[in-house]
Image (cartoon, rainbow, N blue to C red; front, side, top):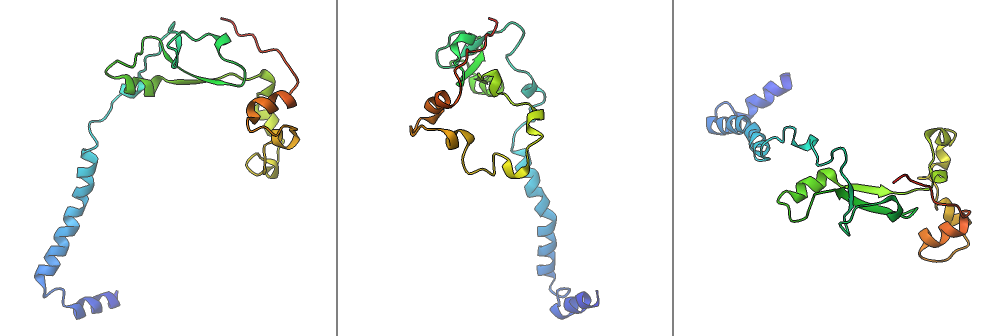
Length: 166
């Protein structure tokens, strides 16, 4: 503390009132810049983001074809994007509603779904992020660049697709 007082005395900041007052003014006005930035973000959304177009009985509509989506339309191992029935691209608030209501549907074989119990016995060294290649790449005889379709057939036994009630 003594060093601070000595430095303040040597700098003669107390005698230079213009510099001192300018510094205090800048420090006092600095927080106002943050207030202005936050104010310009717009009004608070309230509960608008909690309400979507989904309700009981609404159909899933394929975003590419605009036709109702049926379980048979989604192949095993693929994904499809869906939206709620009644949402059209010509609607004024389409972008806002699709951001809150869009779905990505992935259909999997029940055998390929791992539960948390099946992952609990794994060690950190054998976690997927530590391996150099996916497991299908190490045992796959395929050299195709489209491994997702070719190798999945070559390495997994043929099975029937799961039945989904319509």
